[in-house]
Image (cartoon, rainbow, N blue to C red; front, side):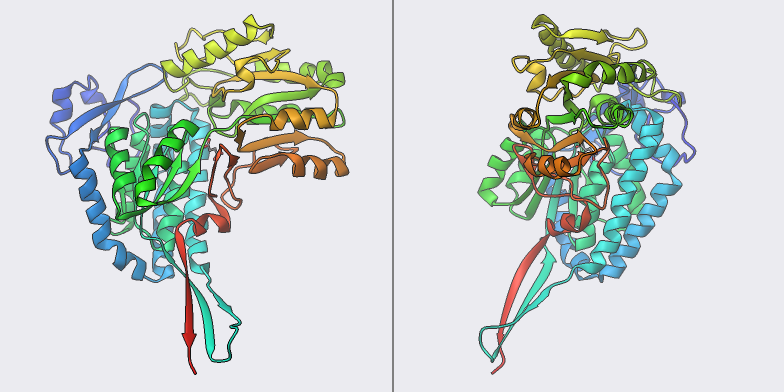
Length: 498
Ligand code: SIN
């Protein structure tokens, strides 16, 4: 286990060299200061690169999760009553501590998630950008005064915190998907409970530790770990929780939405994608190839906004591939802890099986393998960067979110044909296209049925813009001035002063 610069960070949960066997006795001897239940079941956290146990987290019981809701309930009113500036100051102090611990947080992330260290560092900065953005935005929650229909009336609109919130976050971005929900909630005056994915709970606990050190009052931000069904039942059924924000698959999003129906919680759902990436013949092909590397191979292809279906205009296909293939060949795979590595392992064996079965189905149905297609001997979870062409609509890879490092290329002849193909999916999260033509830019961006469109860029994520989808990619927006609205209620106030 790599040692951290700050030995106090996650001291309880990480397996250190002296206890590297990580057997249950070692773990049971830890003084679990963050978890009052000595009998709590403990769950190991593994490094996806080599399967080694790197730490553990508690598996909280239903009673413990309910206690966390009670803790939030007991401080909700006092947190909401603080000034926006006081909350902002605390968020900024949290962000400063995250910056001060950036290298350690990145190491923890790479150990539990597998992504290359340079991407983990980037994610911690990205995560922190949400905290700083919403620390400022919380000071700008303005209401309205509306001209009334009667002379004796005054009409005002107040925006108030919705109350206790819950967040369920995924393993692909173990820090940023937390701060993107927690920062606007806290800035708006809400308390929040977070359930991180059990593959990557250590980053969440490290963020919570730093939030506690920053002085964010106890109970305002609580991370609960454990079995999804146990935590999910409380998050969806407890009437004290007023809002649930979820990032993950469309299937789980549907279930959560149904479960929340009984308590009618406000929901934000950021679900699956099937992003088209369109290269028109008039595009800057070098830029398009560079953008595709970023949109496809970030986090080994494991993002909801990864390019999934690549459409290249038929007459420039060979020229484009001649630029693109050497760039793919130059990507370095390996243990994310090495600075030179561009692509690490997939999160687990099921992910590898899914990706390899999509690839097999495509090849069986006539796709051409141009590079990759195999598992790297360094780790059973590293799929070598792969490119296939001649992809057709009857292949599973054209419909399912790949979530792995495979570029699946199809061709098209006309703008109307490619727009129809791009929109022929249940999903509507992100779409990308490359063109230099001004009129086409407007036509295509208006016609794409997606919540986010990148033109001449493969990287669109930023704290200042609204992230979210349409169709079965969910609803609600995160980041930007729109992101904080998800944590507010609108109260209309009518006074008669006559
Ligand atoms: C996601 O994969 O859900 C988030 C990706 C991002 O924020 O860029």
